[in-house]
Image 1 (spheres, rainbow over the protein chains, first blue to last red):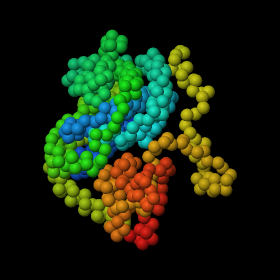
Image 2: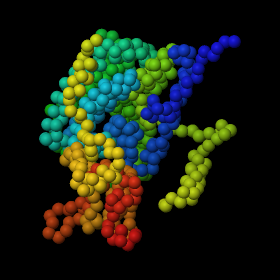
Image 3: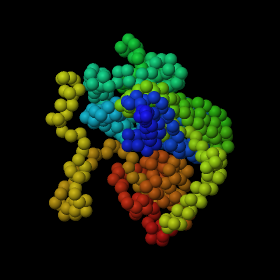
Image 4: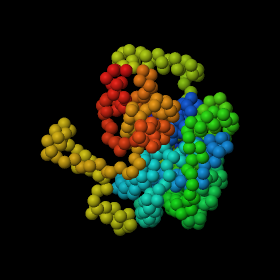
Amino acid sequence: MMAKTQYYVPVGPIHPALKEPIRVEAEVEGERIVRVDVKRGFAHRGIEYMGMKRNAIQTLYLSERICGICSISHPYAFVIGSEKALGIEAPPRAQYIRPIIAELERIHSHILWLGVVAHEMGFDSLLFWTWKGREKVLDLLELLTGNRINYSVFMIGGVRRDIKESQIKAIKDAIDFYRIFTEEMKNVFLSDPVYKARTRGVAQLSREMALKLNVCGPVARAAGLRMDVRQDNPYDAYADIEVRAIVPQDIVGEARGDAYDITLVRLYEIEQSLDIIEFCIENMPEGRIMAIPNYVVLLSKIKKTKGEAIGMHEAPRGEVVHYFKYDGTRDGPAVWKVVAPSYNNINSWAPLLLGAEVADIPIVVAYIDPCMCCNDRVAVVRDRDGRIMDYSLIHRKAVEKTMRLKRELGVRA
Amino acid sequence: MVNKMMFVLLKQLVKKPATNPFPVKHAPKNVTELIEKVQRGEVKINPPVPVPEGFRGKLVYDPERCIGCQLCIKVCPADAMEWIPELRKIRHYVSRCMFCALCVDICPGKKFPGEKKNVKALRMSEDFLLADYDKYSDSLIEEPPEAKEGGV
């Protein structure tokens, strides 16, 4: 009798190794993965539907909650799209303040990723060292906006907080600190033999595969594709800066598209962000920071507007696309559709895990910096016979269950 | 093998910890005992990291200045404001608040006789230690004193 050689290893949706819910089902033969299936859709929150029931200002701050950590990327795409649909333009000073906030966020997001990858490799002292360096940018964001995360600083047609002279000094200090810190991180990550052995050739995505799987952001750039929203569709101050996508073939001569290359891309992007912030604070024009300072006037203008637009922003993880339609009957979007970068990037898991070793799973999973809560746009509920249940039925059942629970537990209203 | 990473990490051994040990350096065995000791003045609490200027903490509501325009209710993304029709004032639930300060921006405020400019009824304080077991506790609800007394 033959012994069983293939084993079924399900991971998730709730698992100690995962921070967010997703399910990976793998068949392993010894250490090698021979069949893999990725199932998503455990974190659907119906945020787009909620946004279509509220006014545009409320929806803007709701969009900040789509992603737990890119808390400026979604509002950025939202304000760019809304301004296009409304036909207004942010004042020049606001157009320079927005990239500063967005680039500071990119710095903290990339440092976070470097720490996470070190943690997934089992190198926790490196995790704490990188995150110690990340604190400084969070403190700076708190100084500029009033909040550590979820800054609530953008507004349709401008920004809500100006950058003062004293704050510019703090930004310059932080830039000096990060120039040295990034140099140290480059030494630590890129020239370390252990890190190199653990990431070289792991999660390798060829240029053709990257195009076929439709990946975006640093994952695509590591595979050698020159794509960056800030370069291809410049908006705000990025049009003056002429951002160029960071690709490994410009730095080391060839793009291999593995986890080592993506570390390289992210580290050099931190330096690029520092350059962008430096340019912005040096060339920041004077003037107003809001096109329409009165929110009531803004809301009534939105109510009268008919139009649709697409807003895009290069988030730390890739491109964020928001689609809007204002129909002229209510003061919020009639249609709001969000496309988040992790949706494209998770496509790369199944082909990369196939043939890999079990020990490589954490790196393959972590190297795209996945954000499950950004992903899920639609949830379909089926009953026992496999029929799709319609919305009104689910709603009625939910109300019934809430009432029953309230009665049973004696919760006050 | 000696490399750069080892050097960087070994250097951390001689540095002071980056974390602020708030409220005390080590987790206490008994929290109630610690609170009693602090009240008697035996143990000193390590202060939290100071907040920067313009920090968005707990919202403070001054009902005297409120004109009842309901604009804050209109813009609040989190539905943290409740309208009290009997008093024509608002009630604010801090446990629902998301600290965006839109209500502070939009509040028109009121001018008392002798004042030159309007003063807003809402402002952000620097208070951020808001943990509580009950989300409806008195410290987490901002409302006019009449509402509290009258039970409106």
